[in-house]
Image 1 (tube, rainbow, N blue to C red):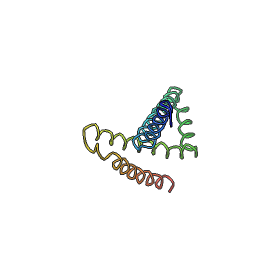
Image 2: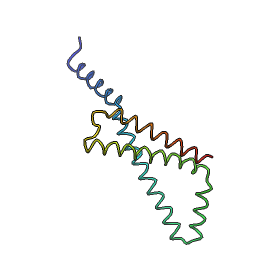
Image 3: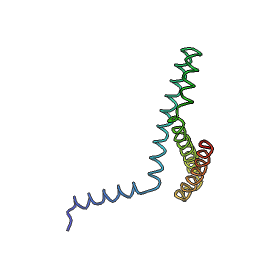
Length: 130
């Protein structure tokens, strides 16, 4: 027989594992991660462009040609597009819930938006690599 403390620990574990196995929790976590990633990207982008512009046209052109010719950054753009697609579609999903549409079908709406997002992302990857 379990003690009261053991039962409480068990229930905390079960509740915690149920939360992390829920689709909504992963959607929430990915939304936060992509939001922070996009914020960091915008800050780096604005800082890089502003400092190169302040330094003059030659520095700006050199910076831009380096960024446009860097292979790693071309592939990183695909991650950026994926983050924008996910964050945007999940934001629309959350907006629908906020106005009372589809609240009882959250999992289905999440997976539909993920399939749409994956299709868009695959199309963008195809365009970028062709």
